[in-house]
Length: 380
Image 1 (spheres, rainbow, N blue to C red):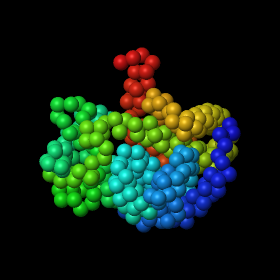
Image 2 (image 1 turned 180 degrees about the horizontal axis):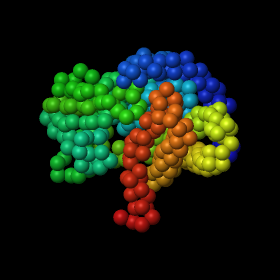
Image 3 (image 1 turned 90 degrees about the horizontal axis):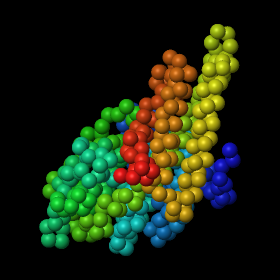
């Protein structure tokens, strides 16, 4: 199916982004995987190339282009030609907009320019050992002390947790109100802020994921993002785009798995003929190809709706659920078609299989997505 059109300017942007990822990201992929973290310089180079905070106003170092298709292009091109573990989209489009949308003019002027250049790297800390998708169950607290706040608690599974210079931390501000929480800008070096280990993972090995600890961290008033009791609503407003971001990555991940598998089955011979000549292979790939095409069309339409400001949380849940489950099925079938080779780390499908598994969990698990959808169609 022909995709919804990108503008001529966006196609030029795609080509420029592709060359950047080929030149500055892909050559370092194996080294980063072994190290368990990407180089900080990758963010700085992306900033120099104008690939960070594209949506931000030019006075803050952005391009003033809020159209989500620019970020969609970056996600797709990074997957094909860079390294999905380079989490520039988390930095640029998932976390930074909280400051762009809810920050004061002083906060935006202070923080956004250094995020746009890649000088400072962002993370967001919501998940705790006993609270994931259930944000209301978090135990981190922030208690007012004069004009400041005192932050205590622990966060886990934080992407960019080691690299980050500024972390937006969600914490309860009123123990008697379930949804009363604030968002606090915690900077590297603040007394009481400590990072734990870089967690070893099944996949996404080059992407640093860490535990964060906060012990009596003093947060000045100018580091509070929006109203100190309004963090829950702010987070909810960002979830639809977060799930759209995930869906874009899920579809391109499925496409990549199909690409490497098509090449493999065309070359691999079984009983004297290519694996691609067997009906089982042909039918399985045909089914997946049709589903992936449907998913791409669905994602492109969701991007269009999102650009119009009309993407609902329920529709975001649908596309996230469908695309992540499809990506999971795709890499599983494609690995099976590789046979024993698929289990070997030297084959791309093996790493794709490992990396994909998190996608049915991050940005809200498949079970949470189903619950959101069910509430709309059946009521609470």
